[in-house]
Image 1: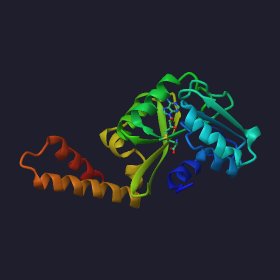
Image 2: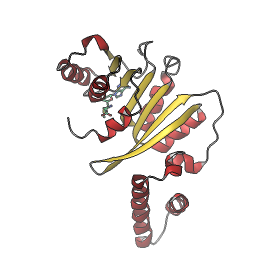
Image 3: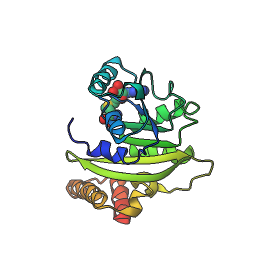
Length: 217
Ligand SMILES: C[S@@+](CC[C@H](N)C(=O)[O-])C[C@H]1O[C@@H](n2cnc3c(N)ncnc32)[C@H](O)[C@@H]1O
């Protein structure tokens, strides 16, 4: 099943009474681990038959038939009304934004969104801030030498205040400054500094990014 650091970080936020939908379930590993933990229901959703069949085969090794529902659909469009917790992991930030956007009405019963974008995390955070999703927790983990940032959020009626550093680094991550967070941004900083040192013309964006990193480290 490979390493589960990233999926376990998401699993930690899933409580025993949560009814989960795993959007883009692929292999179904998150569903398997959540069911092993003891949750009562998982809807496995993927928009391609291949991954959904792989998930079905993986789940068939266990006796969870009465607790699972497999759905071939895009994003949240066929979300079961029982679901209160949605996980959207391992996709690009823009795709996650599209899924949240097109499924806004469908997810009115959802009080927990667990998100992990493998690209454009700042764009995702900006979307959440501007669309009244409150970020209630964040985590950064490292798996196979890659860093993954996970977001736990919920819809709110309040206007959310944020700044550029919140968008770039995460409002909670930048305050917690965990060792993995420091490691990631120190590496990025050193990489940018190397580029600056070797360049004759230094792009403004790089200088600005370095200043931001200096502010949070
Ligand atoms: C890279 S895999 C990630 C799998 C798993 N969530 C994880 O984090 O390990 C992305 C999965 O999302 C599915 N997918 C892509 N776009 C989707 C959409 N709009 N709705 C549902 N599933 C989608 C793909 O078919 C694929 O199985």
